[in-house]
Image (cartoon, rainbow, N blue to C red; front, side, top):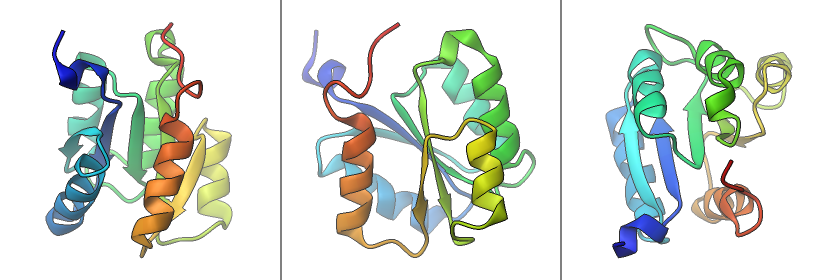
Amino acid sequence: MGDSDNKRFVLVVDDELNLRKAMQYILEHQGYRVDSASDGNEALVKIKQNPPDLVLLDLQAPTCSGYDVCQSVRADQALNRVKILIFSALGKDIAVEKAMALGADGYVLKPFCTADLIDTVGKYCGQGEIQNA
């Protein structure tokens, strides 16, 4: 078993390439294994092929919205351990509340402070937060 097998796995879903790269860089330097997807359809394929511990999910993803991704993940019993954090510029308004009602575990606001992102991801990926089914 390699070292990467013990790292928490995070999937970043956002249509902005530079933002995905920045988040991947930040999280990898915190010891996470990170992959990314540019839209909801790509995210769903990746989630089903290799379920992450945590999905950082933009609500306004093209082709398949973050709402659709959240709802699909929550409808699949095999993915019940996957944590979902909404990553949104919309704030805690009706959009975030809708995502939470669909099964999201929390949210991170755009633009993000690096320290806040690291703390929030750590909270949801911490030892004891994620249990293998």
